[in-house]
Length: 128
Image (cartoon, rainbow, N blue to C red):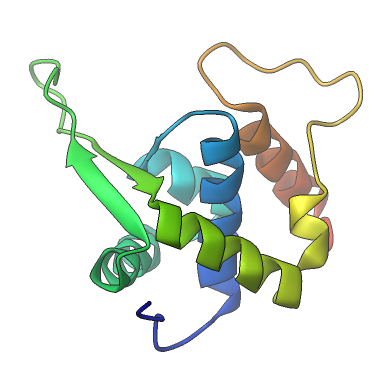
């Protein structure tokens, strides 16, 4: 298993979002991951490149692109990436795998609960 060269807080942020999305049976487009983590687009997509090179993430272009809108690339952890991401999160950020939707939190249609949790945590300035 190839390992991304640097394990950074930003990498862990992206992995956390992807692990929760996979647990919910969803794939995430880059913009949604960028928004959930609060990272810049350049940082987010560099991380995706590293994860794809390592074989941890697979990406696909949305074939049903609406006219006038840029195409979206969707990402999903591979089985190898899921195992590796969970191992890294257990080691470096164990609370990440215990987090779930906030009590009484109602998911917005079309957004996974884990994305909403990440957004709420960011807005509240929650601990990492």
